[in-house]
Length: 394
Ligand SMILES: Cc1ncc(COP(=O)(O)O)c(C=O)c1O
Image (tube, rainbow, N blue to C red; front, side, top):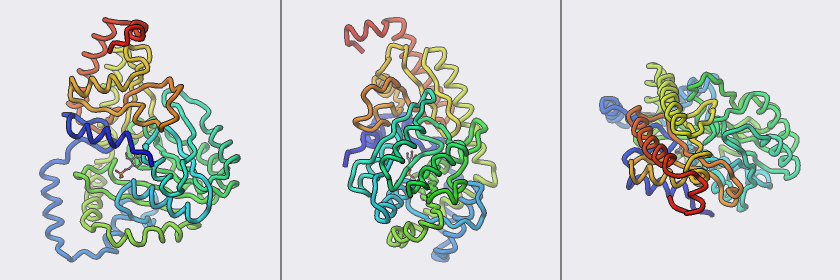
């Protein structure tokens, strides 16, 4: 298995960054009072919790959040990563065939697919700044390769693109014809800062076998406490459920209780809307600064990320070097395109960008803006991109 560049970079960031905007989960910092309330709630529960009851309550809370019937029965796992891994393992055992993934994206998906099937997944490349015909390429690949699974992310990481109902229907129909299961990672679905609605995997029921994945870590900020959930179509439910059997016994009850309580607080206090509003406010702030310093900004439909393209600037083709400067000179960590693009699919990529977590405090976004202004205005005034290529200086 390939080591994850993104994970290695995040380990380094954890040691050196003052402000970490390189991750997908919120960095708003849960208040001490809220944590204290949670601690009291958990310690007063003693051993009175009944596991099934708590799972049932969590299910109802997640269903409400996603706008699904309140009696929807999810399968509960440790995290989003576990949900992806276990689902792929179950589906790979059910039917032979490749897994199709997209790149750039959350790089662990490819590793988890390789672990499940023993083969490198097939990759469909997509662009993040402009529309391209990746869906047409995907459909062609489904017809040609007879895959067992297509795994897509909507809202996408990093582009923030949401698959429309029509796009989902087209993809699901092709999957149905090829007997392929459509797995949709929808962990960013509740974060809708720009007014888009996010069609869920449930909307393709009957067209193909499908699994909807969601995890709490992009919405709930609880010092690492998280859960992942899987909603399989009836046709694959038993098979996915069986692969979770042992895991279920190990799932920490306190995580389930903590996440469920926090989701309830967010529901009753309009916390999800506030999270989306924070993202929207930070997006406007960053967009204005990016335009001033000559960076290109993408147009996400939803989710927590904004991308800053470096084409036409001193850092053209080398967003990783801008990321290194922002980390070393300003203590701000961001992910860049090379960490998000699968090995072997980078060459020829003309899109070089930084990925910024917007579920962050405004003061942290302001520090990033200051860093960008300092680095970009100075660099742009100093040298043209052509000079850099000649001298190789950075
Ligand atoms: C699209 C996507 N799915 C799943 C995950 C994994 O989340 P978790 O932290 O719950 O394992 C991530 C993490 O960044 C992600 O970006």
